[in-house]
Amino acid sequence: MLRGKTILLGVSGGIAAYKAAALCSKLTQSGADVRVIMTESAAKFVAPLTFQALSRNPVAVDAFDEHDPSVIQHIHLADSADLVIVAPATANIIGKMAAGLADDMLSLTLLATQAPVFVAPAMNVHMWDHPAVRRNVSVLQSRGVRFIEPGEGQLACGYVGKGRLAEPEEIVERIKDFLATRRLLAGRRVLVTAGGTVERIDPVRYISNDSSGKMGFAFAEAARDMGAEVTVVCGNVSVAPPAGVSVVRAESAERMLAAVLERYDGTDIVVKAAAVADYRPKTVAGQKIKKDSESMTLELVKNPDILRTLGERKKDQFLIGFAAETEELEKNAAHKLKSKNCDLIVANDVTVPGAGFGSDLNEVVVIDAGGPVERLPLMDKKRVAERVLTLAAERMAGRDGGRPE
Image (cartoon, rainbow, N blue to C red; front, side, top):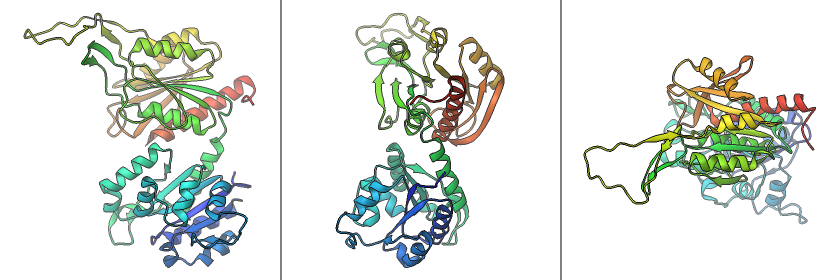
């Protein structure tokens, strides 16, 4: 999987830099061409010569130490990388990345590269939990940077908690998994719906739900990274959509249905992750309704069922639906899959602590016509999306003889 790939390993200044040497060795043994960039602080923990011996390549430390006059070193390294992994990543380098600073060889190269970037943090538990660090991590994730979460245990500072660099074996496996799925959807067109719909009562009030759009955007990001051309039709969301995808705003259920149907015939995979309101006000007031009485009766009418409509009109599209349930998860999800003619249903219990609406994590069961296909434990929504789309890609390849060129 790594043979012939150029992996850029950025090592920043923490005691966990010694683990980066083991990571460098494992990547090299797996066939990767590893190019190492160290910060000056990292070089105080582990000598650059160690990484040179393990990678069999020169190690870059000083941004002004240019050996080849035919190239600018940090641009050359940035352009040559198939993937970048920063391990260990200190709070300092994470902050630089979030702010777009470029004052050393590593930060210069990170700002210049167009390759996928992985970050494996390592720091004191209180530093990892600090609001500034959490904000920087969130900013980088919104830009498509992938984080390999630190582990829990005894830290070098004496604390016990979350902050240990992930083990080199785990980091290598994450890189291999990513590269394995990188082109699974090449040539495919993927349409994702995300967020909650807004059903207007008057110009300032509306009916909606708790959907943040995070799950839909995770699918959009994952599909983009797997090589697909991605369009997101989104309603009310609390986070920014990922870069590199087309975004169509559709506030209400009726507008979302129209936007989806307009693009449906030219789509290969539809991920219907939006939480669409079941009902809408029968009439919408043109002006703000005044509170002239102690009570108000609001008459609602049923909204169009977007997923059912797509299932009825399905030709060759692969249709993925969602079932957010509070009881009888698999039974209700299986019924939804059959009644709406879906290929897969992603079912989640929204009562599970830490999962569901607004969370960065989810715990799901993937169901097809034969029943549960895969149970995914509580994990990052992006990883959930990658696994579900991998299942879809494999089934589509089996159905039509392979992916389009």
